[in-house]
Length: 214
Image 1 (tube, helix red, strand yellow):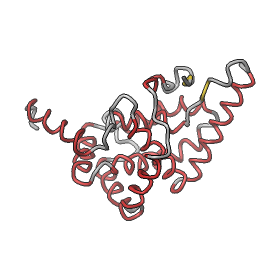
Image 2 (cartoon, rainbow, N blue to C red):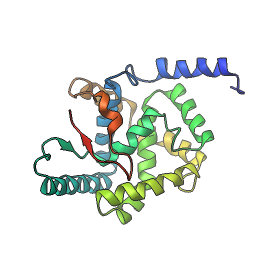
Image 3 (tube, one colour):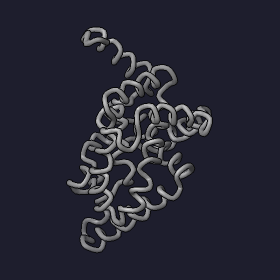
Image 4 (cartoon, one colour):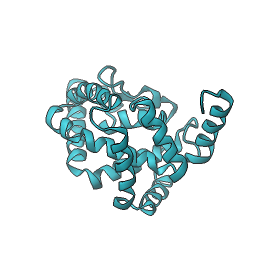
């Protein structure tokens, strides 16, 4: 918006209030919870090798924690590994992992095509990260460590350029029909527990401890 703050604010309000699902940033993060469930379903369907690998790492991490701390095993939860990064991507509309120009191009796509472009973009990025994760991440801790390094490459366009991102983003519209995403969102809307306000406490990539359920 040529650095016009008033106009930029209007566009941001339109983006949040009119383009994203309702309650995307509300306290219980209902719509975000739904989109994370939908995305994990898309990941299982379109990147099954990566999805299964991450599930195995999560299960191993949970088992290791249960063995080392049986007294707290019932309350400590290792979140799905894909959640930790994808939640951040969705909450910031990818502004923390993509270069500024790529982020603006994505926001254009969201305003033109709808919020499903968030899910499509996440799938495109995980597809680009898949080979490195399968090769380098042999444990949950290794996954967090390597993902911090790998996702930094996204910001430098080392893994995917802006033009490649937009091209693959729109190519996914034929691969995954919009109606399929709408149906998944509707299914999970009535069959999922929203994140609590403690969602901000999910494990910091490579640093913090697992999420403790309330």
